[in-house]
Image (cartoon, rainbow, N blue to C red; front, side, top):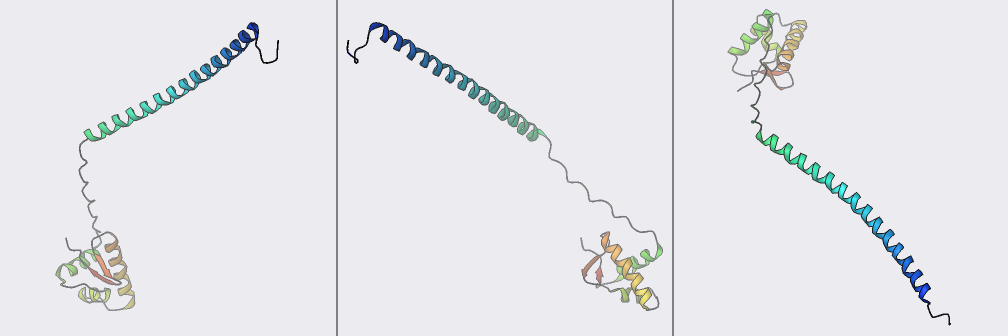
Length: 140
C-alpha cells in the first residue's frame, strides 16, 4: 500500500472522528441557542412590562394643576399699614416714600426697618420688587 491510499479501517476511523467533531459543534450550537433563547425571553418580558406600564399610565386621569399656596399675610400692624399704603399707591414706591405715607419720621433706622419689611413681603409674593429698592403690588 502506498501512503495516499486509505484502508477501510482508516476511512471508518476518519468518519468516526469527523462524526465526533460534528456532534461537539452541534452541542455547542445548541448551548448557544439556549443562551440566546433565554436572552430573547428576557427582552420579550421587558418589552411586555414596558407596554403594561405605558398602558397603565395612559389610563390614569390627567393630574389637575394644584392651586398655588395661599399667601400668609403677616399679622403685625406695621405690615397692614404698609399694605394700606400700596393699596392707595398708583406707582411703585421706595422705602422712604412708604415711611412718608405712614407718617413715620424719615430717619435711616425707620427707612431700613420699612425696607426689611418690604423685602419680606416681596419674598412672600405679596409685593414685587420691580427693580432694586422699588416695590409694587403684583398685577394679576
